[in-house]
Image 1 (tube, rainbow, N blue to C red):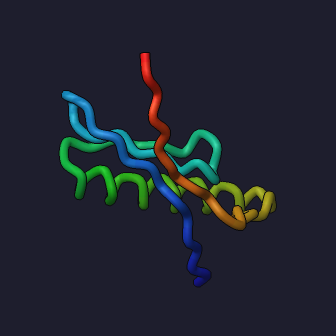
Image 2 (cartoon, helix red, strand yellow):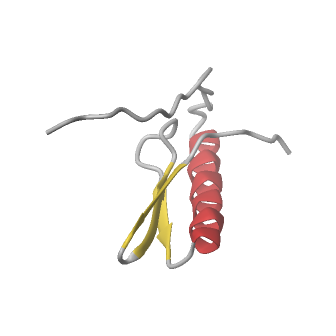
Image 3 (spheres, helix red, strand yellow):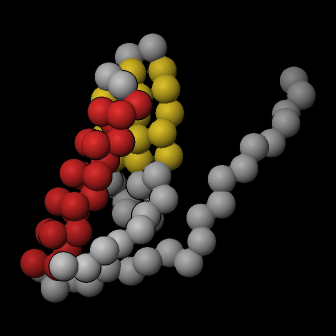
Length: 74
């Protein structure tokens, strides 16, 4: 069994938490709590990887993902 590490982005809104994995296009999930969103994205990533490996597509890992903030005056 191989282990992989991926970056995720978790955002909160009035409906709960939305989470995505920028390194795996189209891989996202949600949850009512932070913890639920985290568990759900792990499941989504696992299913995404299993599908890629079964189709012999391979898994490419991003070297680095940076998350930053910017200030914008309006």
